[in-house]
Image (cartoon, rainbow, N blue to C red; front, side, top):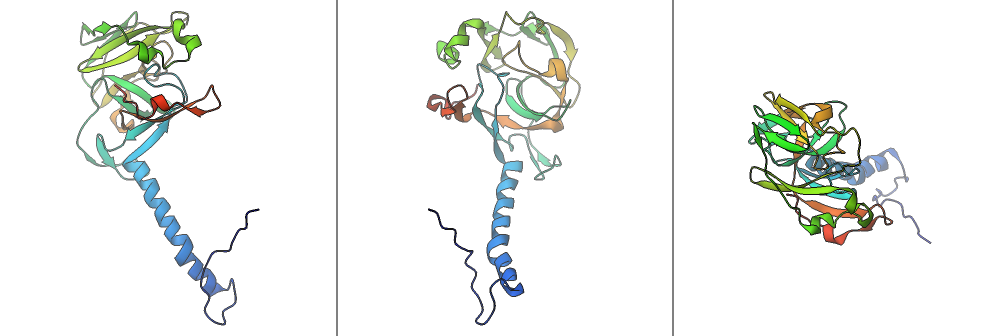
Length: 247
């Protein structure tokens, strides 16, 4: 049996419990410090660093359902906590980076990969990415990355390593999905905008569908899984994915 004790607020001799003076001291000694602590914590999460739960498979096989990814909110700029107001800006997203942003369509928080920056011309041709008129290189994906998916779905996809500049990362397609937008463009990315794609090319609501993403909508950059829970197995931890680097 658990006993709940009352908050320890010292009483002045002769002062009745729960008097006006008692409540004032309770506020100053118990509630206010807690609120200050919570405000500081939430400010850090809002402006400096946070984690993001990934509920969908749009970035598979790089990020899978149940991953909690680290979000570096200082990667590109500093914002006023709880707002999108920029205090300072020192960098911009680069091709190949994984970023967290608010969808320009409905404000939903999304995780995708930057494939084209302002001024780039981007095109998809049968799921081959073409940037500024040059098809990007593709290679064979390692088996370890494929094995991160559940066994029963591994054979349903085609896999490759896509190279965007210096960044080499996994992509996958699903031939059985009808109506996927495997060809797109070419389009030129406007100033102050970015073109995002999911690594799961045939099952991702990205810039092909939601349009270009304004720079102001980008929250931060992600480069690592913090922890991962297996949604298909009673939310048990996937220890092999904890602190896994995201290319």
